Image 1 (tube, rainbow, N blue to C red):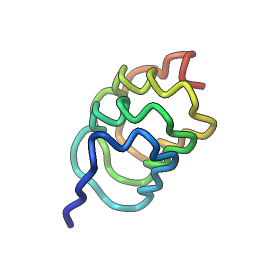
Image 2: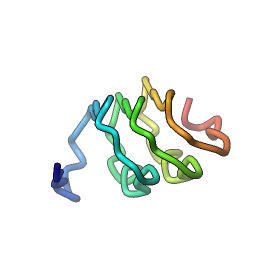
Image 3: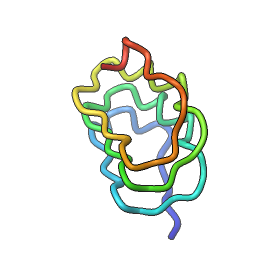
Length: 79
């Protein structure tokens, strides 16, 4: 399954990709979509560090990254 994202789509407000079963790290470019209010990446087998770029998501009111294989800390600016 291929997903194309318009990199200039800064008006995108929600991203719900639960149970998509990705097998890589959380993409750092998600931190560029600064108008996100909801980001659901739960149950996707993401692995590795939680990207520091997520701290750019100042409008975020909901972040769900449970049921992945992630490490690191979520910066206080994110929640």
